[in-house]
Length: 399
Image (cartoon, rainbow, N blue to C red; front, side, top):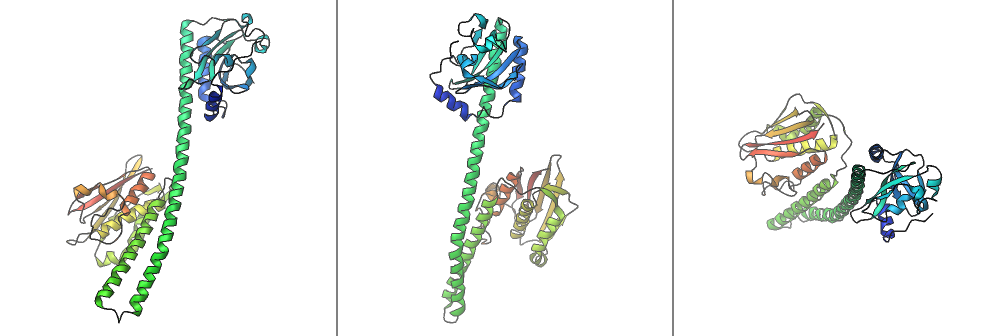
């Protein structure tokens, strides 16, 4: 028996085989369908998808045989991988000098016929074969040969899909690592900034209290400006942290009573709602299955913005509705406030954007956070607005 030759690119070939992790998760149900089809087309007793490792021939998929692998030294496929673009056909192994003394020919499974098409990567590295075997000598028709080649191409595409799946897993792990590092950096920066800001705020208040009588009006104004600046910077830090914490790993889903969520938001804003005669209207709303924390955050931002940007010409009216759209919920928050200029409709969802530059409340992260939350929950968010008349913010959430 003649041992199979070793391919010239053996080191590279083995590296590719192991990097694709094709030797894991044996057998493969998708490939089992192909080996069964190969047997039916070629009329043989056995069909295999083989992978040639350094010392063994492993059966990734098999039909008509019980063993899981053989030694590489006796593998017909170890010969076939030396010609990646050409099918190896042995019509009668008992008469072939390379194989007639092979134990797989002389003993069980008594191979007499073999036809194997190498399974190659785009770089031309043959990892194994799709092969058919029989205990009787055989000759394949041209049609059967072409069909076997086509099935081999299909296996190669499945291998390529597996490669892309592994690449996506790597990207996902890298993104997760990047996300964790970004959040850690954000917290560190926020902590390092917040401590001196708190100190500055404390010193300004102390100066304002102890030296109030001896300070002139202009000096007192400067201290007040400095206090406002530190308060604004502290708010900015907290809002950036809130934005950074919104990740693709959303909170667990649960049954959420929307009416209760809205009532809690009303209670939080009750002083201004009463003093400004603000009306928040909502009818009978459904109980939905979603992340309560994320959903509450979005509604709190949208209602808070309606209050913040209310018109001075009329009492604010906010209407909240939810519509059943078969596979998703459509939530709408409408108001009769100042509205948004058409040219700014896309900008308002960007971080740090503020519609009213004069307004010193907030730092422009609320709607950006809402959009990030909704996208992470699998929905979308948009706004329809008429400047001077009001706005309607709409977002969807999958059921």
